[in-house]
Length: 276
Ligand SMILES: NC(=O)c1ccc[n+]([C@@H]2O[C@H](COP(=O)([O-])OP(=O)(O)OC[C@H]3O[C@@H](n4cnc5c(N)ncnc54)[C@H](O)[C@@H]3O)[C@@H](O)[C@H]2O)c1
Image 1 (cartoon, rainbow, N blue to C red):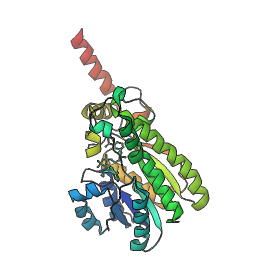
Image 2: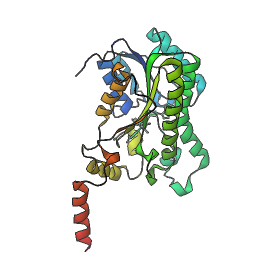
Image 3: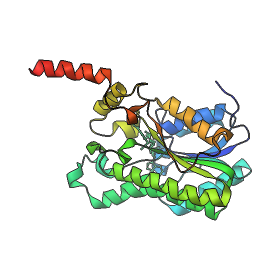
Image 4: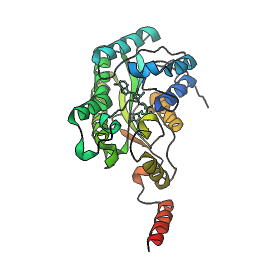
């Protein structure tokens, strides 16, 4: 259902890799709501070519960027302002990658060069984006910036390894830059802490299926799908949430505030009665 919530708004969406990507769904919803935007992803992801389909569907220009490289980000922000014809009203940071997770390193044997890469790609890139946007004065007043996070920033999930620290930094950057840009430009900066979602980044984590099922059974509403996350991002980009800033917003079907659910009690009762 489209309500023209983003009519006339200009944006930049980072991180649409394929149809499963959260950023892909956000782009589709922003398009339905009347926004125009630039799509950006790492040159390597571009070569896979799927983003062209989305670009065509949404009539969106593509500007490639490695989000860890400030010069690349400068080209994205200046190019977006030029191609879209004015300052940027919304930005989505939907980027995450841990070489340690990719290579199956557990928390006790992390490679520190890769740890730094994880932090650079998944967290510092958010700072770099906001820094470039400020320097170029590329954001419109009352603009909105959203980064995607995960509850491992607050709670221990061992298999999420160094991404837990990356998400904690990401959320902290949202607060600090939210304070700065709120004062300077009335721009809001938030993170959305999303349920486990079956995407390339999500399913790359060992044990993903188990913690997807666990979260789904614990959450009173079940896991929030990517499409619902896109709806939530649209609301945060819209003028209906102009005073929400510096928050980490849980979009998790109630997972984060649930102790135990009936579904889990039933499952554990069955398991322990088998053991007895
Ligand atoms: N899938 C989940 O379970 C889940 C849950 C909560 C939060 N998130 C977060 O959502 C965001 C999007 O992930 P997703 O699940 O849609 O997976 P995804 O794999 O579709 O997206 C991750 C994106 O990061 C991009 N990327 C990686 N390195 C980059 C770089 N150097 N420069 C620019 N882009 C780069 C990839 O190309 C890809 O498009 C991530 O921040 C992720 O941590 C995911």
